[in-house]
Length: 396
Image (cartoon, rainbow, N blue to C red; front, side, top):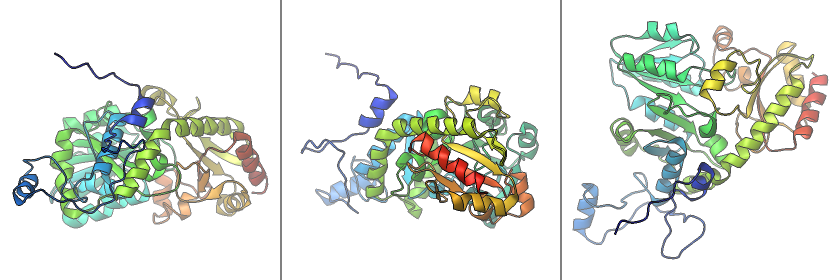
């Protein structure tokens, strides 16, 4: 007799149930396997498990039931065949890039990257003989012109941190594949809900799960997603041997965070859209950039590539650094922090924090002025947030 077919549940349902492995105790919430290692019934069983001839676990640096549950659930959300969790978002980016290259290879990356991501490709990889070319991510000609015979990997983020530019994933993927290279996309700002890089042609997606996936300021984590072949040939051995592994406890926290991800992100995005519309013409702002507004310079691309806007707004306060600091210090509800995607609304001054190591000229290339503020919109009442922003702008 043919077993009944599993129902095809919708995304919100899968984020509550997918990857759940109940123990014989029948717990409602997923079990937390807070253990370093595992025992074997016999020496022969241990041998078979290390030869991958027997299913099971051997060491939590390699795999763990709680970590597996998180990986399965986030893979289902992303539409990926496989996922591997890491200790932080930067561990995910570093493992994804290092696992693809060796001495003599070449990487092409968008210039507008989170500061630590750019350090990996611009400073770290060249120490081991891997060349790097930085390009304007929105300029497809620059991607083509940067390709060399030894080019093996492309890297971009979109929307960009912190200026919220949009890079055409499908077009860049086509250029990468024509050159025999892979494309890795940092999808943090869009979240897995609003943008699907793998469906657009990317080979790998990375997240700082610290951001929206946790979304409540509790723990660090990262994740790498792609095809089974990509994960097994480019990522798995590097993670196993070098150990940037996530703790089972953090994986459990992130697993629970996925249950409420759609509710949180949808509310945060609605709040962000409300604030962007209300503040767009404020006289103290030289510019406001939000992917959900029709006046975004790349609104057509956003409609093609993203199914939703963002929880992030870029504000350019008139008057430079001094007036911007007055604005930041006058905020009463919104807090200054370098994190994002949190239930609490947070502001960052990139020029003096996340991107401070770059020269003024480099920051200008990335659209980062001394007045630029990155606003991560949270779950507070939208009018409380608006009133706080308005009173702080009036004091800038």
